[in-house]
Length: 592
Image (spheres, rainbow, N blue to C red):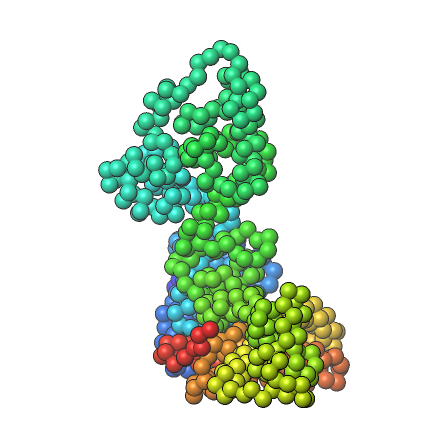
C-alpha cells in the first residue's frame, strides 16, 4: 500500500473554476514541502458531453504554489504513519507545471481562454477551443534584459564579436538571429558592418593606430573649442575624439530630449558610426540618463520581437511573452487584460481590424464632416461653409472677399430668381436629386454612427461605474455577514460584479461589431442575442444597486445568483454565435 498523505482542502472548490456539477475530484499528494504540493487529479464526469474535453486531464500531475506562506485556508488531516513516511516518498517534482493557486492551467470546458482572476473567472474571452492552448508569461524589465543578454550570448558563440557590437548587429536585423547569421556568413562582412554603421572588429586595431593622437600639448575640442589634455579626449573606433564634457552633454541630449537609444551616431559631421553601449555607460554619469538609455534599448528589443508586448496599463513595466503571436487575451500581473495582437483592451467579439477602424473613426473628424455635409452647404463662389439659420432661401455669403448672393435650394445666383417670396423657380431634376441624395446619405450615415456610438459610450461609462461597485459590494458583504451569513455565503455578490463587468465589456464591443455588420439572417440572430444579454445585464445591475434589508436578504441573493448565471449563459451564447460566424464565414461587412 502506497504511503501517502491525505489532504482535505476546505477552501472553496470553485478555485478550479470547473463550474460543472457531478465532478468527482480526488486529491492525493505525491510529494510534500513547506510551500508546494503535487496533486494527481482524476475526474469522473457523469455528463458525456464533457468527457472528451476532460479526458486529457485525467491523472495529470499539477504542482500548485500557494500564494499564502502559511497553512491558513487549508485543513489538513494526517495519518500518523503516513506523516512519518511523507519525506521518503521519493517521487520527483516537475518544474514545468509550477503555478500559483488560483491560476491552475485547467481550462473550463464552457468558458475558455485568458488567465483567471482571483475568483477563477476568465477576463472576457469567448468560448474558443483554440484559446485553451494559448500560454503566456509575464516578465519584468530585468527578465527582458536577461533575454537580451542570452540572445547576444547565443549569437556570439558563433560569430565571436564583442557583445556591444553584436547588440548593434542584432538591432539592425530587428533581433532576428537567423537573418543576422545568414548575412554574416554570406562572405561580405565589410558591407554588413557598413550597413549596421559599426567598424569591423577585425580592423579596429589598424583604425585606432591611424587615428591615435600622440601630443603632449593641450588640444582643442572640435565641439566646444576649449583646450584639454590629450587624456581628456575620447572617441569611437572611427577615430573622431571629443572632450568628455561634450560627449556627456551630447549623449544626454540624444537620450533624454530626442529619445534615441540604439541609433546614436558619432557627433562628428557626416560620421554615421553608432555609439556602443559600453561607451554610453562609461561617458554618462547621471544614473537617470543611464536608466533611460537602458529602457530605450529594452523597449527596442520588445518592439522588434513578435513574441513580446508591453503591458499597455499606465506605469506598468511588465512584458507579456507568448509562444506564438495571435489575437488572444493575455493578462498582466497588474490586472490589465488586453489583446496581444493590437494591445487594446480585450475586445471580444470584434476583430482587431474593425476595432482599429472604429477608434480612428471616433478620434478623427469623419463624423464632424458628416454633420457638416448634412447641415451646411458651400458658397458656390468662394466655397466657404455656410449654415442656414433662418427660413429665407436668399443667402448672402459673409466672407468679406466674396459677398455672393445665391439661392439656398439650387445654389444658383440669386438675381435671376426675382424678388417675389424668394421662391426658387429654377428647378433642375437631376441636379436637385443628386444634391438631395447626397445630403440624405450624409444624414443617414450620421444617424447610424450616432446610434452605435451612443450605445458604445453608454456601456463604456457604465463599465466605469460598475468597477466602483466593488467598494459598495464589499460594504454590502460586511452587512450581510452581520445578518448571520458566513463569508463564503456572501461571495456571490463579488461574483455577480465580475460577471456584470464582463457583460458590459462584451456589450460595448458588440456595438462596434454591429456597426460594420451587413444585414442578413445571421445578423438578426446576433441582434436578438445582444438585446437579450443587454436586458439581463441591466436587471443584474439594478439588483446590485439595491439596498439590502433583513427581510429581502435571501430573496435578493436568489435573484442575483439566478440573474448572473443567466447573464453568463447568454454571454456565452452570443460569443459562440459570433465565433461560429467567423469560422464559417457567415458575416459580411460594411467598408467605410
